[in-house]
Length: 221
Image (cartoon, rainbow, N blue to C red; front, side):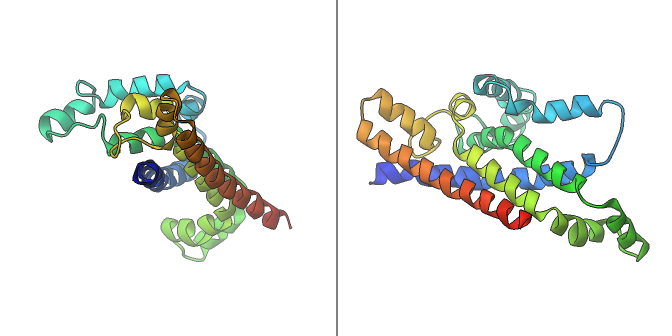
């Protein structure tokens, strides 16, 4: 059972780390973008949401170009810090974060846009600074959208395959997540093992999506 549980544990670890990253970045960027109007906003938002529609192989290719040994950022880690990002747990987290970020950003932005601006302005008039308004007013009011975005992002990170395979590889015990393990098991004819992982990821995804629908039901009720 060790061979079964290792990809499961690794997938959950990668997904949770990715979730932390996308929740922080997605929430902050969404709040900043929610009501601002500036030249180039459409282009910037398109870039932020692009990983949602790009083929995973394209995302993986771009990650290699950027974070690979000879990449723009990869050279910094390789030559200055003597660290290689490719084929590591960090690479898997980066790949999952990139593909999951648009879901968190879009959901958070929708939540912030639905907040009555007068409520935030009234808080500022009462003496609250920008941080207090964000922490005590904006976040609680947008909490339903933020939780939905977080769950969807986690599910997306959990199911990431193409970009992870290209950028992080498929190293058992190191970068082999459930999707890549399923691919290898199927390719090797180990259908029983593949089915175990398939059922596992279906159950986890089902539970998370059910929780999302339940939150929406409570919100509407």
